[in-house]
Image (cartoon, rainbow, N blue to C red):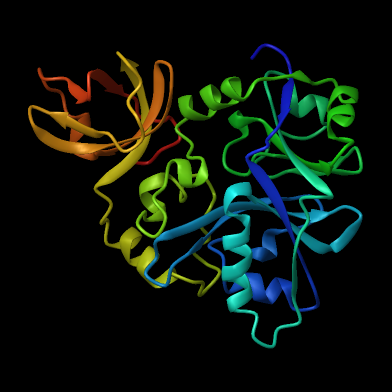
Length: 299
């Protein structure tokens, strides 16, 4: 993108967590440190099974109209499941978990000049008020641009006033996939995917110093014993775009699985030995794949 552009992400929704115990409650649930969350900073985190497998990923920021309220930008199709699972652990905690989708919309803002248009530093998670809501540089990777939680019904006007033109979902997907960044359950298998196969360490989604959280023990063991043998990464696609879940083969050997894809670009979960040079191509159905290691990745 050569100019700042934005779109409202209809695939995302917002939960609002309030109550005097909200921070302590979330701290024991999520993979990141809730102590990092301030009016000037947003974070990205995951909620895991006790066995350390992916259930939900989401962004957290503070409501500029009520700094005691924590807004969670999550997958719209799975909001009820996230709310239900969090509610199971409330017990006697003074916490309220509310679907705030009628009040707030989520937007992605990207392209050259995004940070300048929002008067933000190009620092992961840096946040500032925007149009009655909050905008923040993507906590995963500033190259992705920014995100915003905005009052529903006012979002388009606020984005236009800030200097952003309308973008297509495909434009944002191409940017995300080219950078090798997952999009929730489109790219991670619920109750099966470990975080570290999908970049959560390098993309600021896990805090290793915060102490216990759901699934923390097995996630830490995976890291410190160097047990990761697969990684999600971008692939160039030569041929018809493979459906998610398509096996990736080389000479009959199973080396991975296709995730999301669009035209000639996609994401695939690949064994690391798939990156070794070979005279035989990687194939997903009728398509040849060329994997690309992300500049930000450590493997």
